[in-house]
Image (cartoon, rainbow, N blue to C red; front, side):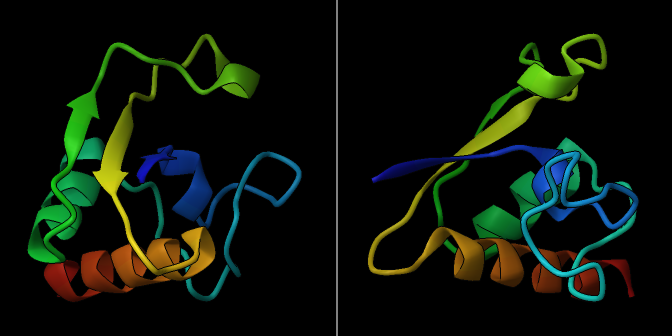
Length: 91
């Protein structure tokens, strides 16, 4: 099953109303597409980057998105794993 991951989903600077899907404590500050892609590769999720796409609520920002393969894991748990991996890669 393919899942779309927008950077806003794991951005600690965004509110839930703006699109963040996980707790602020679990989220990362201003995640970049390259970081999300690297974390997804490390988790063997076969990421595809689409940097010409824009999150619908912030269509003027041109944030891009990542499409990953996921099986037998909820989207929230997937986002938590990616966020945790980005935190470890930053340290």
